Length: 83
Image 1 (cartoon, rainbow, N blue to C red):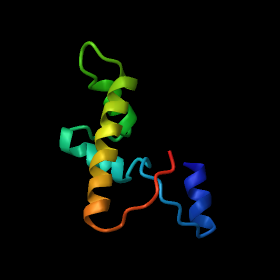
Image 2: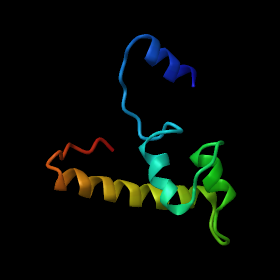
Image 3: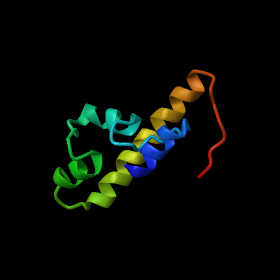
């Protein structure tokens, strides 16, 4: 969180979907994946049998990115993918 505080102190707005209260965390709320410990701890805590937390994270990430891209295209704010 020190990095985030430094951004605030210097007035830098850096969008990052994975802050604890960021868009990815809010998106995960639809699955009941909400925790004071953050989205990573919640995914790890509720991982389905037969999979790993890392596999679960990337499955959620793929779904999140697909929905976000569809929303960006529908809203006309398509931007280049920097992956």
